[in-house]
Image 1 (cartoon, rainbow, N blue to C red):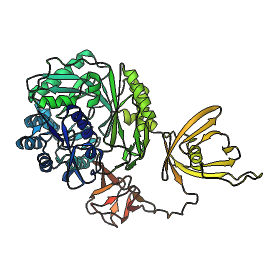
Image 2 (cartoon, rainbow, N blue to C red; image 1 turned 90 degrees about the vertical axis):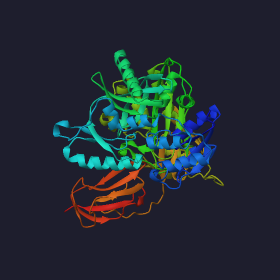
Image 3 (cartoon, rainbow, N blue to C red; image 1 turned 180 degrees about the horizontal axis):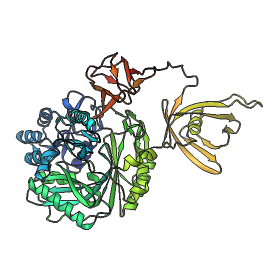
Image 4 (cartoon, helix red, strand yellow; image 1 turned 45 degrees about the vertical axis):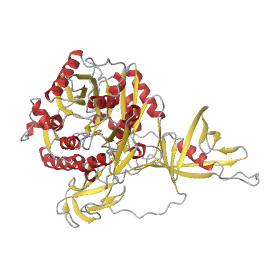
Length: 614
């Protein structure tokens, strides 16, 4: 029996595994990098061990340090979570060689399936060799890992070399393995997968299907179980292929077999030899704790011959600190408040007051709804996200709500190109026009106290806010009757709650302030100074950092005075395990270069200046 378990991971998945361990009576050990010293997973574990350093390569990808931590903390088992070392056969062997229980499949199964190239060969599928014009579009893909890292769609042959280089660099940073391959890119299609669970006694369960078609940058955003609208014959085929893949490598534990479904046919993509991010929807539908089952299998227990029966429908939305309207730019800063209604499940690695940094994935939480029908689950999840309290950096919450309510998704006609088609409409700003007034009235509460009233009317007070990228100025007055505003009747104005009568309809506005940052219901605002300082104008052609990150690479021979062409990659920023290319905005001359390789930059930092000819 396992008594103490170390989770070789961080964030949400570590916290989720610790929760099950607490229910099973198993002590827990966390590992953490220096930036994660005060992270939630390090705080909730019974014991935490430091991995010195900041980058994944120095910490969570160091198998030797993780095994040493497990031994020194007295753990007798290791759970890899997902990402990092979860599909690293050498790590699994190191855990086993240290006399610890490995919560996962045999190293040989990981070796056979963790590399997507070898997995395809096992299933009789060969990757593309030399790419010709007739092969386009193609997908460059990392052989190891997942989560959309190391993946690029190539539609023009002259883009292939750059895509291969970027994919290799991103895969090396995220997984410690730079192997990539090229395969045909099938569009449109649906991303469908089968959860499997296998024991050491020969039983393999195919646990239904999941649809994960809503993706950005090949990373899943919304997942659900079961995959809606699939013919019964196709579901049976998917189950049979998944079981075949598992038996081919003598699989043990939880795993996922992924497919692209197009034209009524299933195309094998890969097998993930680990727990998936989206496993909660399967847990909800089958009333299972997959982590508990993983632990029981690792302890040698046999699964019942028949899998449990599915009930109802479950949908999961991944809540990211990112701005979908600005090319999914990751966001950093303090997460002041995160709360969702009790009607849904929340899996998160953050709590109020935690800092969202630049070193790791931008996912804040997973929000999961389960209901008897798909329509009810959709409604429950959309409403819960809409009512959630999210104070801090920008998130994709509005995108999630609109996606769940979009007619194409609601009628289950989506495919992997959903966001390519609909992103503009889904990210169109719709700020509440009365939010600035509510913020100003809350700010004014208790500020003005007069010793005596005069018959002369008071001058209007003015307050300026930045909302959705635009400046808004509001006016209000203090009178004997209280605060008033043109065109709106103020029913109540408190520091945290403002009630306005707008055209006969009474509306409530909950207001929370964090310095200059104000949140009015779901609308974020920035209070602007009454007399703004004059700002120096940036030179034309200035390139600013779109997000906080690290300059991990610069174009060869790049220096001030060099000629550049429009669209030419100049440097690469890495933030939250993704690499972003900063390209020349026009053909001209690189007038100035303000950063060096390895330098960390903040949003809005001046990177370079490209001067176009007059």
